[in-house]
Length: 113
Length: 111
Image (tube, rainbow over all chains, first blue to last red; front, side, top):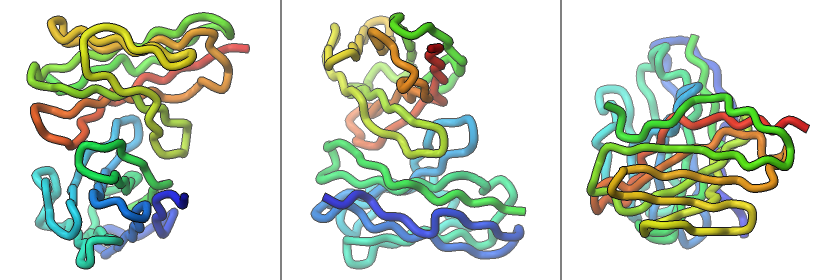
């Protein structure tokens, strides 16, 4: 069974630029999560989808971050404009249903200069 | 107060010893608890989940939960150098299915 796929793996941008990350969950997984992991910290949930609906986006900085999962499968997370403090690893995870084990993708390491 | 507290470490133990990793949490309504292992530069992977007070064993790993004391621990018996990683404690707050993570404890197992 293929795992969670993410791209790109690394991205370096200047502050105030825009960036987008892509995630493809494990086939059949209804729930998809985006986490931000800053160096030395644990992952922090940004947004949680159940199929194509948002379950929780309470910690998503909506003035600059947006995410969508239009067809209930893959998802994109966008930052516009980026700030220095957005430098982090962005992890996508998926689970079969809400209460099931979350499986993480390899992450995208973002550096904002 | 952080929702999930862990000592950042590093916790250094010799090979073959028992490593004890601890985690405290603030939300008394939390029901489900998890331990994830994260190797440097890699993504977290689930090691153990525990939902009831007491111990839960899986191979060399034992998770312990004490809801009255709001305390979760992970014991690793016969520690191996390959166990060297950061161990993240996580929980589902209240009835939510989202995960709240601690900052992790870095474990070093010396050969």
